[in-house]
Length: 182
Image 1 (tube, rainbow, N blue to C red):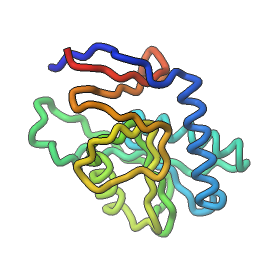
Image 2 (cartoon, rainbow, N blue to C red):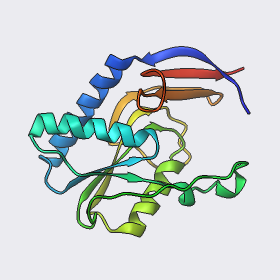
Image 3 (cartoon, one colour):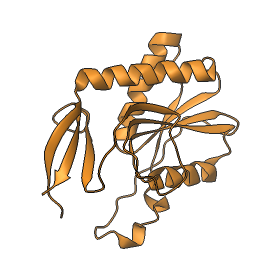
């Protein structure tokens, strides 16, 4: 297992909150409200980020857009290379996504492979009118032609670095750090 050490704090809890508030405003503006809008968080941290964005949209618009949870484990292209036994958890969508504007939400956009897997999973469930992508951090290094529509922060990184999003929902702290291999 690769060991990392913290190199720099990219965002603190206030920075995360401000970025998610801005993303919520951008989603509402681009969608012209919340009609036919569905937020879908990619397990694990994308789910908590989607819930927070949904809460901000509710404060802005007075209505909570439906949001769901997407598990992409079986859609990963590296499934046969994993050295551990992956745990498949349920996908939970509150309604039929056909004809809806789905905003996929994740913590970090890197190679684009997670998002490709998420789009494949969504299209097996239904046919959205459109799929948009919101991420807290875009760190570059794309291997697939995928880009985010809503980005909390663009962070150029080296390939040997790692970006770690830590949320109170899953971790002891609330911050985004860049780590380097040791």
